[in-house]
Image 1 (tube, rainbow, N blue to C red):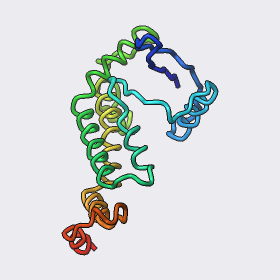
Image 2: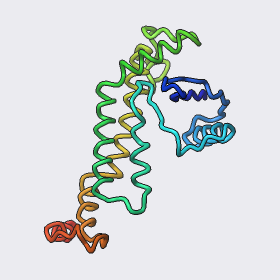
Image 3: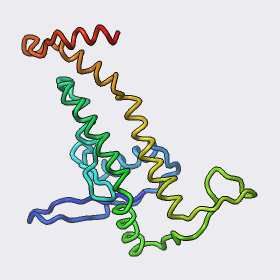
Length: 196
């Protein structure tokens, strides 16, 4: 795992620095997170002060959302809007994010490592070696890695924050006692009863 930081120096110029390389035995999310946090701690960098960047330069979509959802006094309506925004950004990345990502990865590989031939035919994942169903490396990385990862994240977001769940949160927000029940809405209360 390689960690590269992008920061603004005292003169306001954007800088990039390799923070370090870490050997990771397992590529699970938990193992990668532990290695990442350990690397940050060794440089005395708190994770809460960082903003992530995707390979295409887009702001890390989950930083705002995760902080908003963790605030105890967070307005449920605002959190719902953030969830919808994240879903839209993920969908946009799915539709338009491959080319910028591939370009940046290729530029990085050209400088540091030998990149695979993207037109080379390989056996499709999930098929036996005897039933050769060939696809290109480009197809494998684009469809079976990039799109599959985004689809899995979108599926998880839709599972956790489906339309009914979101509507339920909005309806429950009308019972928030903050500001003397200023969000109270009879129609939302009726809709809450209908959902149940």
